[in-house]
Every structure is written in structure tokens, then in C-alpha cells.
Length: 186
Image (cartoon, rainbow, N blue to C red; front, side, top):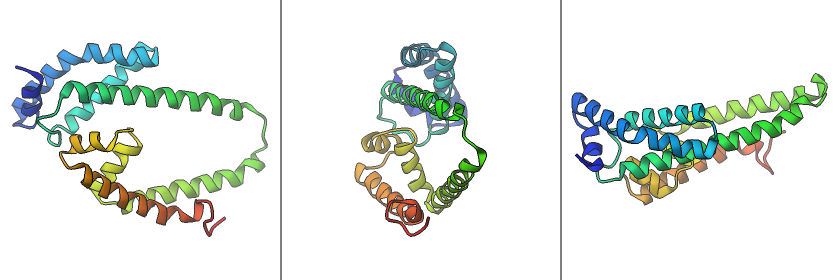
């Protein structure tokens, strides 16, 4: 059975989906770990990232386009997660320098309050999004997928993805206006 057949079976009944997922997992786990390890240079982290990708494949199994390429989806997802991990590590290293510098708690308290307010505003804005709009926004901004990749993953047109992103960005801008340059607050 080829990969496209397995992908089509993923959205079938539970037993068929489990068998297809098992076959995909066994076929692609080791190559995906090698690909992730080449980026993150840490085998344990690479394995964890691939497990996350496989879990996401299982969660999205009914939304995946049956005519898509599971190999391309898996490698792209693994690559994106690995690159996000590397970026996060770089940010953490840069932040560690600032965290290590002796700064009084009094000087950072206003910044912490503002940070908490912004976090709360982002959560409120995300809650305002429709489920599909939020899913498109997260795939784009959190997972780094391109519109065409999102369209393929969700089984919709690129225009539909563009429309959902437009709605998401408008909603986010409206809710976060006080914290953007030229906003009213602060």
C-alpha cells in the first residue's frame, strides 16, 4: 500500500485509521528523526519533535487532503517544528543574558504588568476568533505554514485561507490596538 492510500485510510473508520497511522509511523519515524536531528543536533529533542508531528497527524487525520503527500506533510511539519525549536533556543540564550544581569525587581515590575496585560489581551483576541479562523492563524503564525500548505492541510482553497487570515489579523489588530505603536493606551 502506498503513502497516499495510507493517508486516505487515515480518515476512515477507527480500526482502519489506526492501521494506516501505524504503517505511516513505522515507515517515516526514523527518517523524520534523522531530519530533525540534522537541524536541532540533539537526538532526544528530535525524537520529541517527531512524536509531536505524528500526534498532530493523528489529530488532523480527518482534515488532511486525501490526495496530498504524507511524506511532504510530515517532512515539512518536522522541519518547521525543528526550526521553531532552534529559534526558541536562540531567543532563550539571548534572554538568558538579560535575565542574568542584575536589575532591581522594582524596575522590572511595570514591564511585567504590561507583559501580563498584553498576554491577557492576546488571549481575549484569540477567543474572539472563530474555530476555523483560529486554526488558520495558528497554523500560519505558530507553525509557520504557508497559505498553500494550510489550504492543503485543511482541504480548502488558498483564497479561503487568505480570507480567514484577513479576519484573524483584523480582530487581533482591533483587540491589540492599545499596545501597538500609535495606540491609545500606555
